[in-house]
Image (tube, rainbow, N blue to C red; front, side, top):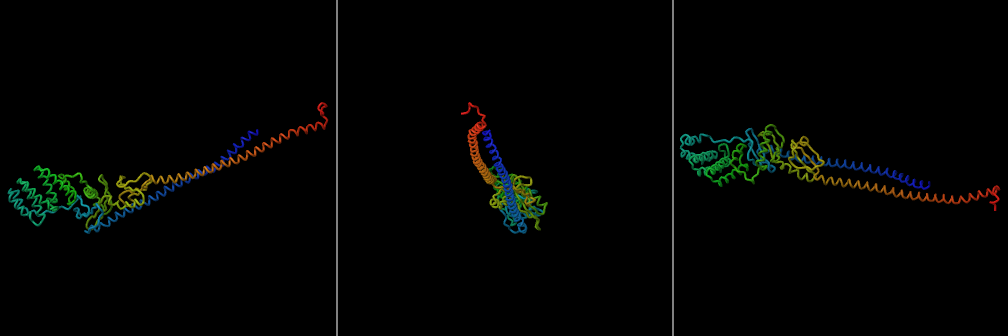
Length: 447
């Protein structure tokens, strides 16, 4: 019985200590879990507030850029030369087409005023000799006289007719020479198109007819350069007509200041006509472009550029804020920038006044997550250490108490054993004394 009680006591004591130490451990674990939850919520809130502030700054910077563009429109429409961003075109549009251009030249325009031609009576006599009388020699003499006129428009028309007469006579070298003289008149209109373009196209035709491929190839290169450099104010059908015989070298690619920018202007042209002012963007496989416009007394003033001309001003802001930004068009297609996976803040065009939806996210979400994970791991390590300390303290207290109880139990057992050993002889002597006093002892048991 004593042994069973001795074994039962430590088990009960152990259960009691486990219960008493388990309560603070459970409480500590619950508190740790709550702290981690709150820390995660606070971290998410801090990140969102930071991204929201960054998105507001980026949107404000982009809006400031567009506002600066809009501020240039009245001055440029008044005829003043303004400092435009790189690869940006300013156009002043009247009812009959583009009447003023600054900045990046375009190879063609959606609409241009019709070219004026010299009065036809000037050529009436020479044309009668050429067509009715079939007197080409007389017509050539008349056209030569008109070709030296001080009026370049008259000279251009005369050279074109002179070359035509030479071609009718089969004098192709003289026709080529006449067209060569016509190229020097550059943008003087002839037959509704710039003189240089007309002359170079006809020279290509003549070189092909004579089989001079090298000269034809050289002339194609010159025609291509004249078209893509945007030297002339022509419309799209005229551009396409001359481009048919032009060669586009591999190294010559459409750029935002060239054919791509012209396509963007063509795409937003109808919007300029429908609305008095505004901001818009256009995206295609050749890039993204942004445009601002405003009605003025002189006509519709507009500025158009590739998106990089606008976003270049926010590069430093984005780097300083250590965020990444992305712009999406109304269809949800990415047009500029890229954001990583993770928390992000989105601002719609209605909120920002921009023609895009703006997304802002942490520049390096992996690094930001690793910092948060490190802090969380530090918290967990601290709580684990505290739990180990509590467990170790409980263990040592249990050992100390159990040792004291064992010592006390041994002392109690020792006293009980000694008392029993002493009590047995004394009881026998008392019993014998009582027998002797009462005389109940037998004779054979008496000494």
